[in-house]
Image (cartoon, rainbow, N blue to C red; front, side, top):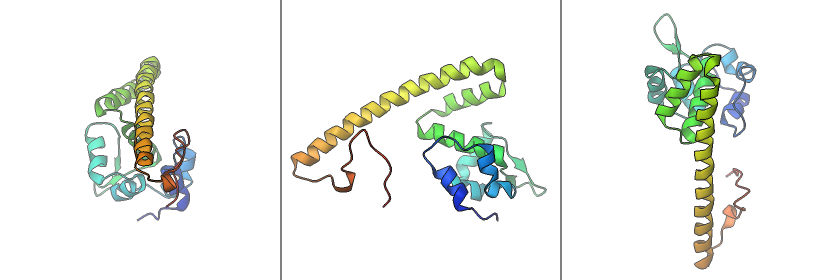
Length: 163
């Protein structure tokens, strides 16, 4: 089993942009392909989800001589991207359409852009709804005399905090 390094965990677990192939290669993906269990643990999804993504054609995974799945850097990068899209609430049907477009080559860039822009608009609206909901919750906490404690951050500054 490939040992997972802190560097790769930081890259995959970051809230920043997607990692580049160079960044993925600098970690255990550079030591060789990862197993389903390793990728599932690293990315924070189940092995069942990984197999589902492969079954519906969202990711192509190499197999070793015994038929076991082995995730190289490109497959790992794709899985990270897919999980970020799902986390943002993109439906599997839209993700499937996007991946189909990607596989269609450069001529599909305008359609990919349109799909992502539409999803971005929905995501921005969801964020605004959540900001409003958080303000209502904060108001009610204050109404009942409660303190926000560690959550006492402004709605505009919702950075993750260490526990």
